[in-house]
Amino acid sequence: MPKPKRGLRLPEGDDPEGMASLIRDYVDHMRTRNYSEATVANRTGYLRRLMVWCADRSLTRPREISKPILERYQRFLYHYRRPNGQPISFGSQAVQITAVRGFFRFLVRSNRLLYNPGSDLDLPKVELRLPRAVLTASEAEQVLAQPDLEDVYGLRDRAALEVLYCCGLRRKELVNLSLYDLDQERGTLHVRQGKGKKDRMVPIGERALAWVRKYMDEVRPSLVVEPDSGYLFLTLYGQPLSVSWLTDRVRDYVEKSGVGKHGSCHLFRHTMATLMLEGGADLRFIQEMLGHADPKTTQIYTLVSIKKLQAVHAATHPGAKLARPAESAPAAADDAAAREALLSSLAAEAVDEEAD
Image 1 (cartoon, rainbow, N blue to C red):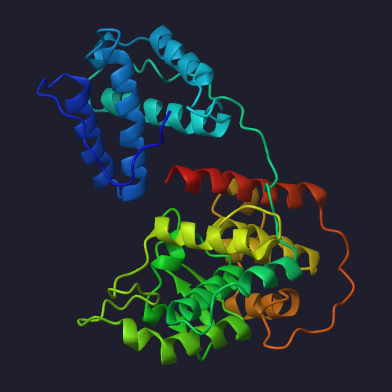
Image 2: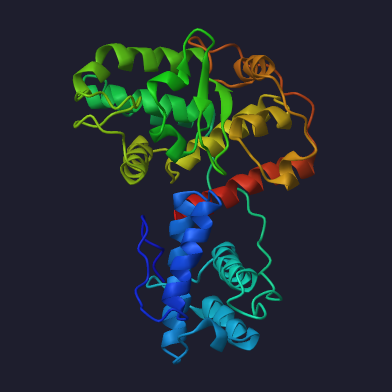
């Protein structure tokens, strides 16, 4: 089963009580509630799948759909096999059923239906998985060394990789960085409208900052097409990098490095969190850097100041300084359950990114 396409493609249909018309109304509802466009597009894609499945069974209106029908659809998702023979992950199934439940909840609240047939649907239990691959500090250096620094694009890519590794940004957060989000004097990055439309401030280490400065001084001026878009990392045509292009580019560097591990942008996010944990960083500081908003992993922690976060980052991240410090003994073991929760949330986040 293919993933929803990037961008929003609304279903077509003239019946005011039909699935297509009501899905379009639901899209308007989500936008008025300030849902992100990625969430709106993904949920629309999932509901289009339900609509097609129902149409094959001559069900064209939501009022014709009952709980047993939705349970059949849920079993369909469980038994479906992709072209490569792999099933849909339980995480993906849960996301799709959540979208269905949200749609019918909207119809009840807007008086289009008398009851919600999806209200009692049980979501599949999502397994807690650790990241599939994490780089060691030496492997990370191998990947970082892949861009050709004699080439302007290679220098740009090296700076982008350093930021991914140092700051643990999501790929969308990296491509959305603007010149004004970088505070060189304070050594911070302002991540705007991250996941959940939440802003956060993260430290950027001396080494990553040095590479970004070099890129800004030597490369970016040649990439700017007036009027300057203001984005930090630019393409040949002066536009911001696309998420899909960045994913492919980073994956190529990982493959070329010969470390024997597979991954792309999120691999550096996993790596940053793991290496800081191994360096003795407190979990609450790492979660602050990652921008985690899941109450299961963050509600027990207090918010920390950017100054304290900078100090911990500089002391525990092996790539934060221009010169690598001598390795110190690891700190006392962290709470195992909290460590597993952090790494599992990173793995689940990677699944979400693949669905974007």
